[in-house]
Length: 348
Ligand code: ATP
Image: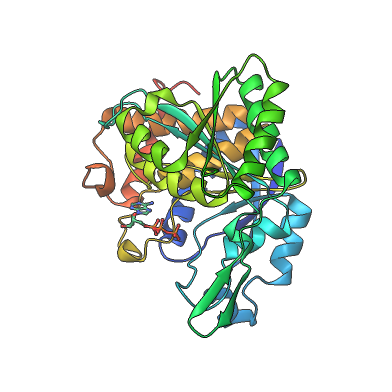
């Protein structure tokens, strides 16, 4: 075993629901991969949401903010947001606080897993701070509520720039801006104008525009026509769940919230209360989010070791969780990944 040479301090929010189960599976795999590749982790753990409120009286403790600010990198499990009432989304609050303006969600098939669209490889780049997620809602008069959709030139331009920069750097061919500017002429109209302006600086990347409802139909008919989907916040949220189904469901798709100073890596899925505490959750989505994190902190050999182990388990198809057609639990799946990473046939 290689001696650990570099230690990374990472803020860890295990989350609630299935969060603690998937987080502990992921940590065990990262620790093992790190030990084999000369990388160590110092995990700074914090609760958030209802669990934190019970212990500290705060939904997001100041110490958690401080930790993310210092470490600049966090791995986060899902945190439940009450529906229709209660405290504001922890995810949205953290994205605002640390200006994590880009939400990056690669949707890619894992080897060996039978899916509707074999070979699919698309990316959702979602604006992460504006739109109806600004949380500006108020009662105008009883029975009438107004919610404000905020779209700015600055926010739209920087997310478009992010998508095109990524396309250029990673040799992706096409960017589709997704909108509803036929109805929301001012807000989505501004978003589109910004996308068009940015696109002019990237002549090698094909630029197209699709209306969001048509996009849903087009995606189901033929998702291969898309490469990068560039979206506002709400459309990106909805399209992410739709696209996750193409590659096996929410248990698989990773995500990264990226800003200029900090980054928080978290799965696309929520806290899945229906399967929480039952050893049923698939930790793959959080594990692939952790792989994105490892690349982000320049530990690509560790990332590749984890990804190789994960893909080996999918290729064998013997120890998969129920959501992807298997019969194994979260812990057994994690054990299988650990074993696969040790196997000499898996090249890190
Ligand atoms: P949110 O609005 O908080 O993002 P959501 O509406 O997307 O949440 P989830 O909590 O992600 O909902 O769950 C949706 C469905 O997907 C549930 O049936 C849940 O069990 C399933 N699911 C989500 N994540 C996983 C996972 N990691 N493993 C297995 N099943 C999952």
